[in-house]
Amino acid sequence: MKIAVVGGTGDFGLALAARLAEVGHEVVIGSRDAARAEAKAAEAGVDGAANEEAVRGADFVVLAVKAETALATAESLARSLDDVPVLSVASELRFTKQGVLPGESAQSIAERTQAILRAPVAAGLHSLAAASLARGKAEGDALVCGDDAEAKRLALELAAAVVTGRALDAGPLASARVLEGMTAVIVNLNKRYRGHAGVRITGLP
Amino acid sequence: MKIAVVGGTGDFGLALAARLAEVGHEVVIGSRDAARAEAKAAEAGVDGAANEEAVRGADFVVLAVKAETALATAESLARSLDDVPVLSVASELRFTKQGVLPGESAQSIAERTQAILRAPVAAGLHSLAAASLARGKAEGDALVCGDDAEAKRLALELAAAVVTGRALDAGPLASARVLEGMTAVIVNLNKRYRGHAGVRITGLP
Image 1 (cartoon, rainbow over the protein chains, first blue to last red):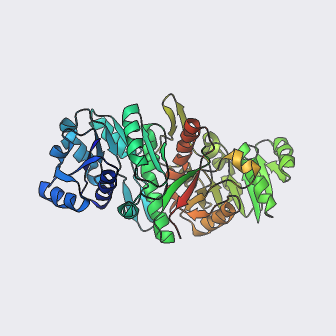
Image 2: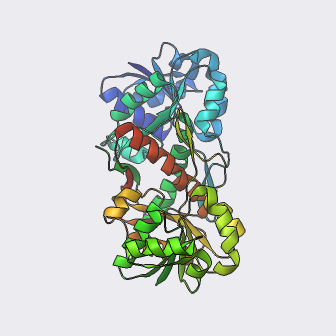
């Protein structure tokens, strides 16, 4: 399928684009700056374009921008996206002396993105380390959630292609509060144990 | 050490008490009802008493009551607990047609418990399935968090004794929002895949 990775010039987006292209998807990365998108796309062997252009004709759109710009990006692309299913991967992090804290809002970025868009929003891939994904499939499982069955199905299909483990359905979009928060936990674990933590779910058949 | 498990007559508390007694801790389970605590304690081969009695002289107290009664229990025990370190294990769950949702509050039960108690509060063990713990060590890793170094150290020591994997320091007490939320994700995974999900962290040395 044709997948647009908005914010695809960042480390995570670029690594994701490369992995998706490897398994045969037609991938275009988007950026606010078309020239930057094209230059970065060449590194990953995919296409690049300005965000509005990148999402045109896409079957699925990954919003891989940073948390700070996720909602503004969703607003700016709402009309271009129309009803094309979206995957939200951003996590809010607050860096403090005590460690990294999850976002302060009770609502996840994914739920706030859904409130902006007519398009159905799924969320997932939060626990995948960009550094791991840049070298190949990311170690561990990918957790995905959503209220829309089709958006979740596409997200699970995409996720399954980029991890060494399984893509797992973690329930409704409200689970994004937890999946986004896991990024803060993972950053704390990485600092404490000097690793690149990922998540694997045990005990499922 | 002497460990009191408040709410120890529930499935999780009772299984935890049995595992802790096995590795040599002096364990007493507490309940609002002393007779019930004693009867259940006999099943697990530990002591039982009314909550106020159970926490007396304890080195560490596990608050294993359900989410609905966690804060009221903390309030009722605040004076008896004094400054004895506490481990909060409760998770709020909201059952809906769409699936199980995490708690609606931005603050975790553990943080709200800390606001009530003078005693330092750590949080952890949320992802351990009672059914798994009842049969022996629970499969997977145990994530623990806290702002107080001594409470977290005791919680990590306790956790390491009851899982097949590792006890891991997931950072400050605010991480409890995520650890508590993981219980909702785990219940959704259990329903969807008909298993007893647990968590293992990959990628750490």
